[in-house]
Length: 120
Image (cartoon, rainbow, N blue to C red; front, side):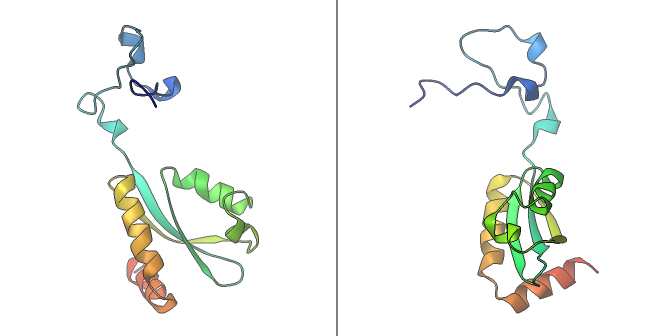
């Protein structure tokens, strides 16, 4: 679909002011800017009805605000209020997606045990 990589969002490009603009966008190097390392979170919410919701995000604060506002998912929107029960930092989004899938396969007792083990 794309003959070259799609352009990065300019507002997030570190060092873009030092790069010559051309038809081909050059992504900033992770060696030059380690803060650009992919960071992701796997989180669990305890909903108002006592159920647990598991998800992943790159911006935990923003995602929690959206859940609390009832705009992040239909599941949590119908079970407000929600509170953060667990947040696990992951190296990248792939790791976060795998961990989310692993947690979702656990039964409720397993999820509660995971929360208890991480909050001590």
